[in-house]
Picture (cartoon, helix red, strand yellow):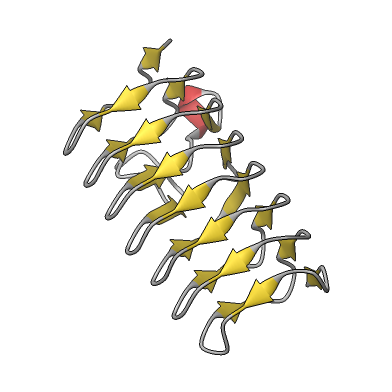
Length: 149
C-alpha cells in the first residue's frame, strides 16, 4: 500500500495493502478501498464509499456517501477475468452511484471521462464509455457497452 503522507484518512476507513492514495486525498469515515485501487491527487471520498477491483479514480474527483465503484459487472458472462474501471478527473459522483468493471467480451474497460456529474442512484454498467462533461441525472442506468459523448 502506498499512502502519501499528505493524504487525510479517517481512522475508521479501511485501505487494503496494494492500494495507492496520492497527495491531498481525503478519505472519510467507513470507506473501503481495495488492493488494486489507485486514487489520484486530491480525490475526496465523503463517507461509506466502497471502491474495489482494478480501479483508477482521476484527480480532484469527489465521491459522495454510499457510492460503489469497481465491483464485478452484473453480467452473467463475467467469469472473473481481469478488467478495469477508469474514472477521469474532476468528476462528481453522488450518493448511491454504481460503476462496474468491464468484461472480456466488451474490451475489458469501463471508462469515464473528465468533469462529469453523476447524480444520485445512477448506474454505469460494464464496458460503457462515458465522455467528458457528461451529466447523468438521478436514477439513470447506462447499459453495458453504451457510449455517451
